[in-house]
Amino acid sequence: MSRFEDFVTEGEAVLTEGWDFSWFAGRATEQRPSWGYAKLLADRMAKAEAALDIQTGGGEVLASIPVGPPVLAATESWRPNLEIARRNLAKFNGTVVEVDDAADLPFPSDHFDLVVSRHPVVTRWDEVRRVLRPNGTYLSQHVGSGSVRELTDFMGPQLAAVHVHPSLSPMATTAGASPMATTASAEAAGLDVVDLRQEALRMEFHDIAAVVHFLRKVIWIVPGFTVDEYRDRLAELHDFIEHHGPFVAYSQRFLIEARRT
Image (cartoon, rainbow, N blue to C red; front, side):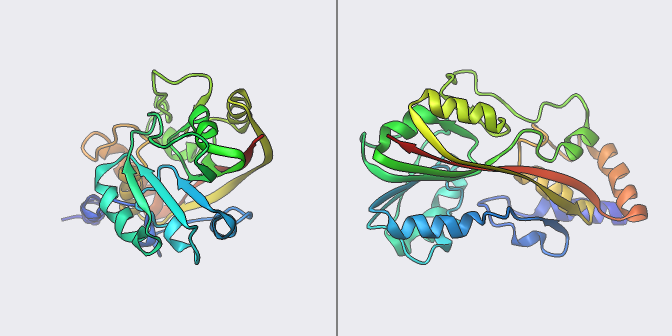
């Protein structure tokens, strides 16, 4: 078996459940935003009375906080992540509910003083406002427009990196929306955006196994990705990395904080 096939087989074999990226150590790197989302999250959670984490994944980021609020809930749409999140958030007595990304939130109005989300696929701003208490806060780190475009373009210039849910209203945004569009949707829902920051962050892929696993895990970069369909492009990228060093791309991230007035 060739070195390329070994890498591809390895990348295909890694489990994709949850948002634990520790497997990439030594194989791919990504700069972190200067604002430090995990630190901001920990600070806000320590002061909250009732908090909700939307699209928690496997709860890994939320589980990193040292102190949880008296009431903690989370939503997740992908079934394999649910039990992982429940295990990770059990130490806070957190409740994890299965909810489609674009669906209404199954919580009473005016219920939470803090709503958070890291890299949401869909943000229903009308629902965020509804479940927030007056003066409640929404804090989130979003994937910005053109994120990892270099990899998307290499795999196929015709690809659309963001899938827009057909039922979404103007008061909703998807991963890959611009900060301006996201702010407009938040404000249309009746929220006051009080902080907005944006950064482009360098990524390096050091072998093709890392690329395969990344595209299987972060499904909006190349929608419908399979190794069989993209084998020729993967082989070309493998040769590039072998001869010229890591493939470089840039992730786009922005932090948004909004309040219900």
